[in-house]
Amino acid sequence: MVQVNGNYLKLKAGYLFPEIARRVKAFSAAHSQSELIRLGIGDVTEPLPSACREAMKAAIDEMGTVSGFHGYGPEQGYFWLREAIARNDFQARGCAIDPDEIFVSDGSKCDSSNILDILGLGNRIAVTDPVYPVYVDSNVMAGRTGEAGGSGRYAGLSYLPINAENCFEAKIPEHHVDVIYLCFPNNPTGAVATKDQLAAWVDYAQKHEALILFDAAYEAFIQDDALPHSIYEIDGASNCAIEFRSFSKNAGFTGTRCAFTVIPKSLKGKAENGEMIDIWSLWNRRQSTKFNGVSYIVQRGAEATYSPKGQSEVKNLVAFYMENAEIIRQNLAKAGLKVYGGKHAPYVWIKVPDGMDSWGFFDLLLAKANVVGTPGSGFGAAGEGYYRLSAFNSRENVEKAMQRIQSL
Ligand SMILES: *Cc1c(COP(=O)(O)O)cnc(C)c1O
Image 1 (tube, rainbow, N blue to C red):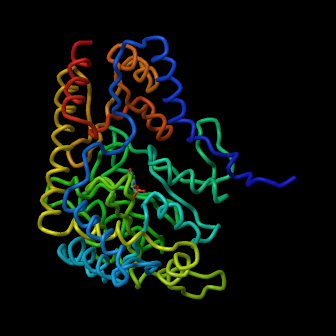
Image 2: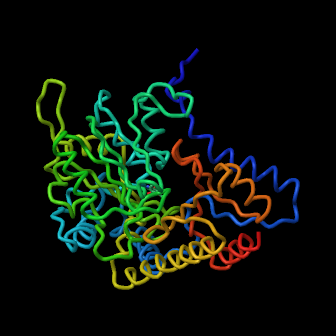
């Protein structure tokens, strides 16, 4: 009989969202009259900006003509989109990123997993704990972690705990690692990094010849101008970092699908024989073989986020979610809870009351407030004792959820 990839059988974290769904279903079955408010999964709720919709409609009409028809596009993305990204997201912030260092894709979830294709199996990998589960699970699937231990941690990964005690700032490891995943603004904790903090990571990466995989999916939510949006705002980062960006959260593209990955041409890795290899060339080769590009229509939609109208609509979307986050922060603080994040990220990270664990607090809010969040322990062992609420919902639902929690 055909053999399956045994690495998939080592997965643990995949039980989080199915377990939430199971508990919600059981509760709903027993209490059919209660109206649940879901502040759990990190999906956006507001409509697509009209600048994007107009650009996509125009692109569809072009596709209906012989001269405007587009078949396979470049695997790396259309140059006009890569150019708009380089200019607006990087050069405007003083980062010397060229359009051809940008690879357009259909999501940074897939890019941040697929990147493992071009990295050697012997690398020592570090992740924060708690963490976006994709980084861990994609390493498990690729056979880089071994089996999970009792706490759900894998022997083959280095875990860097982030908690209230260290202000959600991971300590730079004293030992050697080859690959470090960083996500700022952070999912799930909502923490953000200063330039000095990122500079310390770049310094570590340079000393250890390590690679930083920097996930900036939430950069648009940064409210303070002094905070870095890109790792390339740090000197030396283009020799040691890959950055992942997405149109999902800033422009509501979670269902439309468009993202991009930045691989500076100066980035090098080592072959087994010690030879220096261009990482850009490997990714270009990987994408050309395994990927056939994002649809012309969607790339035109993404390009429109950089038009004056698109920029103002994106700004309003972000401001809307950040007001939700502020409402959540203030109400929970009033209810006597310790809250973190939510200032530069659409996630509020809550310390659960003493004597309770993450799932206990989940069950309490489900039963008593009919509010669904995410137990912190689902993001890693060090997330135990925390709970995540997302600001992605209508104002009405956020306010109603907060009234219910207040009145507990
Ligand atoms: C939502 C999210 C992304 C974006 O994923 P897409 O595949 O581009 O929709 C990336 N990283 C993190 C941490 C996220 O939460």
